[in-house]
Length: 194
Image 1 (cartoon, one colour):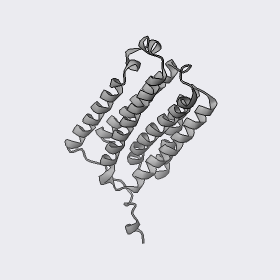
Image 2 (tube, rainbow, N blue to C red):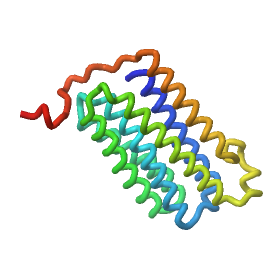
Image 3 (cartoon, rainbow, N blue to C red):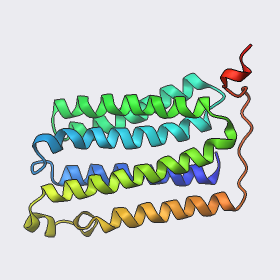
Image 4 (tube, rainbow, N blue to C red):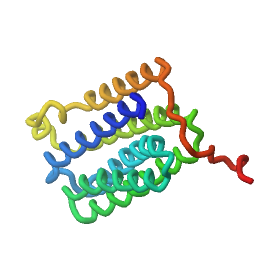
């Protein structure tokens, strides 16, 4: 696993911890549609992102990479959903399962020369979606209640800055010429099939 992939994994872990902390702190104020969207968004962003990393890291064993990615997605969406309701748990767990599987399958199908680029692209997309998710969650909470909370939950700028910093770190690691491990399987392309 390259340093870039560790940076990406820490990025998704930060998203998971922030979302879990926010939902735990304001679980009684998050209701209605937002209560169902939140675990789904977390499960999808974290599941797909970690799925791309795990899919690249364990590309030699596609079954293991897909199984691990599915479990990470189920945990990410399911734990956050379990703080809200059983329906939210199912919504988050199933969304995370699907996203984890898709992330791992994407990486197994791509040549290793594209892995860093794909992980970076989905880090950028995931960071943007998490920023929008942060705005949505903070808009759901009443202003006086939000002002009494920890500083990390008060402003969306923390999530924006975190995404920007992790993307810059990832780009700096890519520019330093990090090499990818040589997978022990052939390129999965329709042109290579006989």
